[in-house]
Image 1: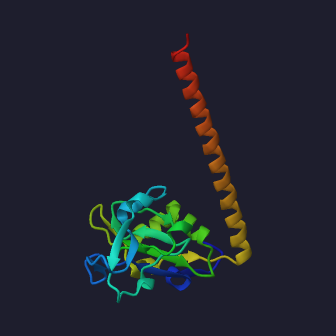
Image 2: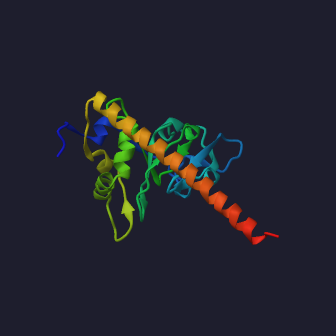
Image 3: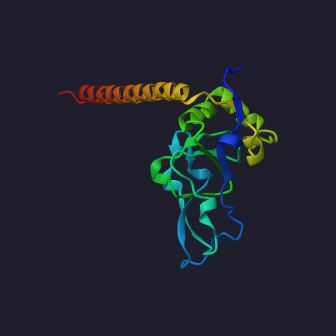
Length: 198
């Protein structure tokens, strides 16, 4: 139990699903406006696979603003056997998502870094699983249930401290990976040099 007041996600974030592929939004007319559409295939464990993002043609009457994502939106699969939590990078801003994906856009009351960390933590993943209408191994997230997820909202100064901790940890993680990759490359080079020693 947190000492901070709890709020439902729907009160502090905008939650929406993407464009239905079989609705009236997509068009086969190549003269119609084109846009990049992110589907389930583009969600990878560690981010978006930009090679799997499709270019589609749209009905000129479609209001794209309802389906566009912004930098720092959190993407979740609406259905599948596992829950993946992807933070939208800046270069994906303005792209569309399809109806297999849900986007969560934080408002001013909660830092997006904290909500992302929460959803990636076992506590937050459990909350997402509770918000899914499960059929055997298949998970089905709905906007209505995700909006009802309740979580603590600390004061801004507490959030700022937590975000600083997250950023420091991520920086150390990146540096450690770089060092490990250099050591592995060095080991490969030494091994191959030994193999071909004259």
